[in-house]
Length: 173
Image 1: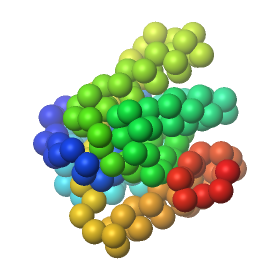
Image 2: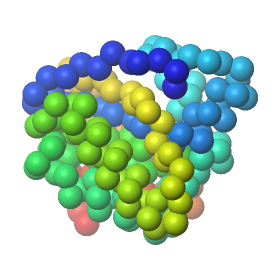
Image 3: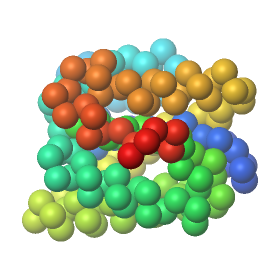
Image 4: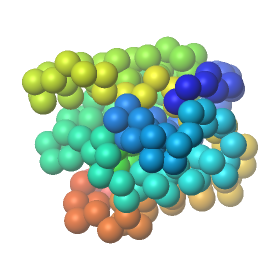
């Protein structure tokens, strides 16, 4: 997004992480005539609101949803303890307790998923925006609010396939 965000990296920290498709962020920056987005909650909220309804960079659909959820779940217990994931058409929300350094987790998630998705799509373009947003969860209340946000994100965006876009460890499968 044009800037390197400061990331808190602490073993066993519970993290709320969002990463976005490269095309969606490029479109947002162009449309809003912005060059740099800082890691400020209001700007992140504005970007999330825009991307929830934007079609720009919306490649995370149909079979790619289950491919991506399966890939993210495959890293559970090695890189993190996964609590929840929501696959929006152009971005991903995760809630996990980190077991590895955050940079290693994100490199594995974004690199591995890009390889799988690009292979599925027969594409070689850069899939993910370089940066990502992370926020350490500091209380049970914040954890519950974040979990519910992730769980309901696709429903609030009125996505017809919302039920396929969420995985949560507290939900029955």
